[in-house]
Length: 472
Image 1 (cartoon, rainbow, N blue to C red):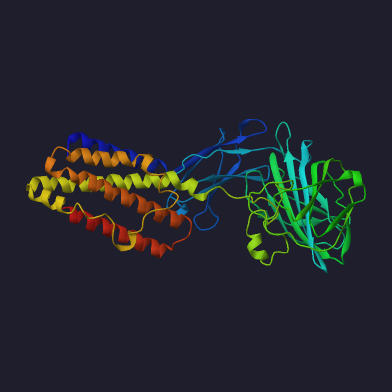
Image 2: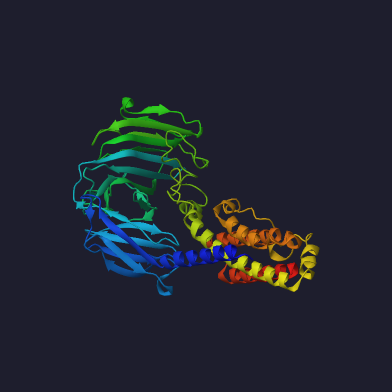
């Protein structure tokens, strides 16, 4: 192995060690988005997501809005975290994937009343059998206040439900957040409810599911309390819609849901008479995820009368619309995983080159042994014989791992008798990289238990050692 190759490997190992050391500190800045100034004194909470949501630390932002947490085994070092900043009683969150060392959080001042609130959409979806009507209502609320502020009060968002309606569940989704369960609060006026959930700048969604007695016909009055760009009513085609004011609604056909009737009222005003009557029975069949149409922002994946409501409720959005899916969880972890691979590859390269150096020292016999194993395919036996087809199988080769294997190859190129060894070492390291990536993917996705993960990891190490011994 040449001195240049040794120096390159040593520099790579030192750089990676420094990077990993920096990753053990998680710091950032809390900024007030209303004033564009540091949010000095705000409480910042570190939450470990490795095993649920465990509070791992708390600190106050300094005069510059900055905060810093030291990560170790006690607070989930190496795993994902959530940073929560509390400003004027409202929580703001930012995810910190594994390996992240800097996270910034933006917070906003709180006001009891915001003038820039509007409803982008108010969607009502119904289906019924002979005795029960099931409905889902989605509110899409836009907070376009300037300067940006969060609205929060004791009856922050209000709505009406038909008489006799029983709320089954309510979900709230903050801007760029995930749906969480919420509780409607009955108001003094009958059939009027409030949701005490902050309306942060951006788009907030509320979705409620309810049931009510039904005898084949019912009058529904949405009683809008806010102006809305679109008020949409969706029914099975086997049911009939009749508006009290025929000019208020326009019928629309959605080619993606041919079994539905879609009625739309545009630019509705507060307290505008929008009552309608629905008759008949019917259900709405499953709709492919991502399908568009008039109710694209609220079209269901299986209606409220789905035979498996539990399965339906596990989907973000609860079955009312195009699902509010979380980002690909692997996307957050891909670069930290690649970094770990680079460390393993560099160490593996050092082991291989060290063995090659000892082979050259013992003479040409080692070259003959290496050449005799040329027809043996790496990892063609044991638990790792299957090819890699996971989502990261094509992502890694361009990540820089090839440079590590290239450094290994350059150290042995000076000997013609060992010309095939670097390529074999590269193949082994490539297979190791692919298998480790797939193993990490399965662990992150929860497809493998910790015990099975440790066993598979140990088997992979043992397999690598066997392959390297066969080369020598």
